[in-house]
Length: 340
Image 1 (cartoon, rainbow, N blue to C red):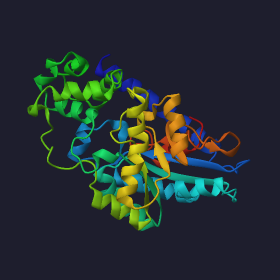
Image 2: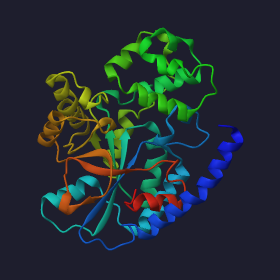
Image 3: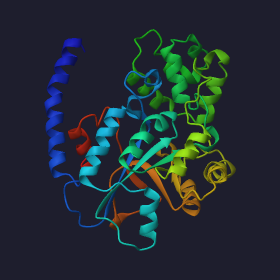
Image 4: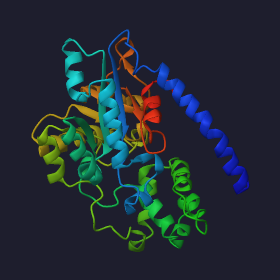
């Protein structure tokens, strides 16, 4: 498609999308009085300024800017109370009254930028959130294979041609760098397990390590402990290594990711860790059953609102928000609507 045709298509789409978002906003569950208590759970990953170099190697659907995050909090405070997810779960399990509408804010992975940008803004507003930490990767640099792939593509590294598993990423060499193209490539690569992808990347040698690999990408323990102690953030488990649980190769590996991660976090934090988050939203029946045994509640990546009549505490729905789908107040309210 020519650039003119692309621009024309985008020009036509914008007012259509705006009209759809307006309709969702006006008819949304956030505006109505619900027939039963309803819990919204927002899913965030990274909070980074638009000009931050760390944005370059992150998928677009993983990032909001600090300004957008602040706007989200302001909008939320107009429509419903913000609650700590663990507290809401505790009240539900105890049979205590629940607010008609409530929203829990969650962050996945434990990125350092959550400490730098989200934590001060939440503290300033007197709000709370949950953060799901990857227990064995706290304080690490370049911890996850998608970011390593993005870094190699950004650097146009010919090393990507050295392993057949990485062929989709090698196909991006010689093209203008596009975060959207890298994101699509990452989705293709998810046909492989984390073990296979990390082994392929590690086989490329030290030259395949990101250039900033001496700087932590995930917040170190002192930062995580500070946030937990402040009462602004409560810490949950996101496994030991961020392995997708439907790729666990044995019961022992599943046990380590689900139970071992909780034990490590509790040892560091000095208190119970009641919440779990499924990496990438992927799991099987055996993993779900073990999570039910070990945790009071767990969140998925499945979009939706949590209503009492259909509530499953260990498969809680969330609403993913990022710069691409919630940059304006109208877009954000459309996401809150529960209408898609």
